Image (cartoon, rainbow, N blue to C red; front, top):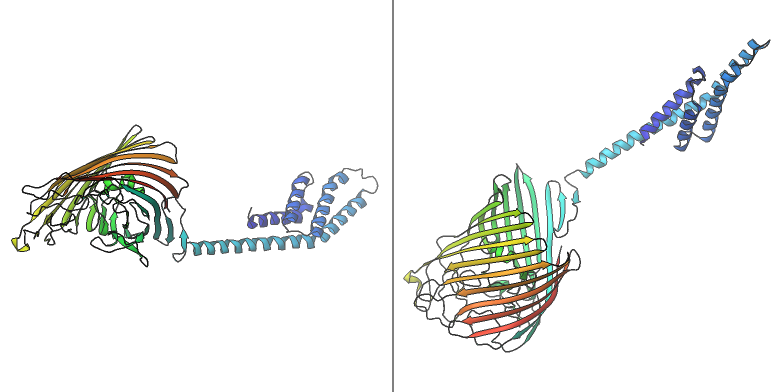
Length: 534
């Protein structure tokens, strides 16, 4: 109980003590009064001397009625006078103790008022916008600090793998993703499909508008060898090298729950985004690409079932979720048509008078224990001023690249399945607009798919298997027979959650590439490592 409460108790005791001589002995309850005195002594409101004096006085008055019943023969008036005199004497003796008890009660009340004022002052300080507080930690959601109306979230992940790659027999395939033609086994300590990641997000609400600012930094383990793909170019395993820093994520958002959200900056694009986010090799290695000189990341299933979505400057809009449906659309920085295979096999372009446009719709629903997510998206971009060994920019040749995709993820208890398909014209393969246009300026068609199954045997242990294919077809009049026709892979992996943060991974991947002229290559990769999320 509070000090103020005990002050009231003390005051009650004082009043009781002061008026006890006027109360009838029949109305007094000795046990209640004694309990009050015991409580005041225990709380320090009475000293031992004060307690003893008040208790003696109480017992005296409690005994008075019995004396009043005694026969009053002869000396009745004198006895009565003696009792009154004794009572008055007792009252006089008790007065100092009564006053001391009242002073103690007043002191307790003042202490209670001071404690309450201190508590209110402390609460005002804690609620001040100048105080930074830590929100309750949720595993996998990062650390969140609250500075007044601003939430500051810091999250990230780090991974590392040992990969041993074993090339099979093979001949060169331009644009192929197998290392089968190298003829040498290779070992690497490297990142998987994910580099490391450190993401800072600031969120607040002003004038009813929810806003956020995001900065994502994604460094790798291996030395960088900057080229056309910057930090994602092939590595450089020599002394005195340093890792690359990939600042692929810089954007702001603004919106409301009823209107939706506008995004402005650099972030993952719409087309192909769900394909990679649902790909299990995102948490492992998959196909290595180059294992002799590792880049910032491996390939995973990029170019072996889907085209990489990429992180692209954009102005996009995402609607609110209505009955499970959500739509997104945006304009994006146009990307060049790129001769990835080399050797003059494809046309390139660096001229863009209009932006790339992408859009996506997602529908999520549940039937019984089955949860289903379906998505579909499109992409269009005009490539202008095509150049090649037979085309000059002054020829003013152009091509409209177009693509569409559809995919679904199904979850039933501990089992999950993903199916995905894409098709494009001028889209290319592996990366956006890689080898999508023949050297004569005609668009090449491409398509691909992957299927994936996973099963959680326990809350910590999961097995995953997947198979995927990406095909690139020759255009009319196309003579690039050495160009890749098909990249495909099979992947099997085991994941074990050692803790909420740390996941252990073991994986096997088989990769094949085939050209239009019959050349082919294949390789096998075994990888093991760990990934940590915080």
